Image 1 (spheres, one colour):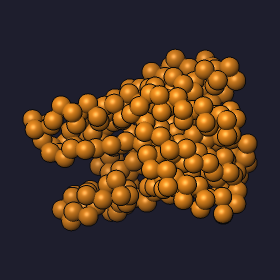
Image 2 (cartoon, one colour; image 1 turned 135 degrees about the horizontal axis):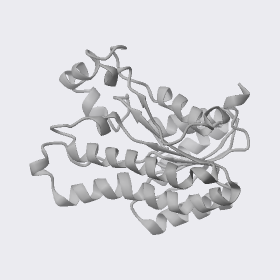
Image 3 (cartoon, rainbow, N blue to C red; image 1 turned 180 degrees about the horizontal axis):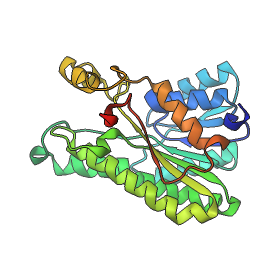
Image 4 (cartoon, rainbow, N blue to C red; image 1 turned 90 degrees about the horizontal axis):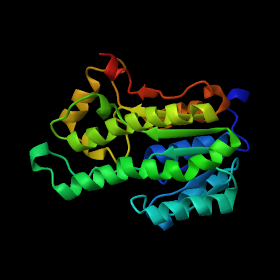
Length: 254
């Protein structure tokens, strides 16, 4: 289990007040990591941090942030360093999808928002954290993408485009910063039971389509994505970089 020990690791997670992000934070803290709980709503972040701290293990601090604002990203990184010290692991999990429908009806404002939050903010945040990782010659960056990156969609086209762009971002950063011993990887979840995906798994037809052809015949739980994140962030994953780990119950294998 020493391969997965995270004592002494400081982890900055975006979108970590619920769903997959919260599960990652909880599980990493149980392994000894100090974690930042961050999303736009301060009261929700505080409640999750309090929950983690009450359980014991690593320390949790709450730092609200709107990741679409570069100045707020700078604040997030500065406050993380002030509260915890060096940032050893960066997890870009926050994402939006304000539009569901065909591409021809996609409003320009919605497309711009999707790209800004799901892709551009990840690039900006990496640029803010990478310099210290290069100096230290060590670090792990994880971007939570989606299996939507691998398929076309009649209703989630813009979201799929943004998640595919995240995979290109991961590969490029892995190539750029590999010589500095910085690992950059993506996790591509399938349909997971979160509030973010509620419109999908609460729709019987969509749920059937997502599960009937998958080998495991079910959707995932947030903790099942946390396991992949722990692998990539811990000593167990130090020879992994530039990869997209698909956690989808086997759906993409069919």
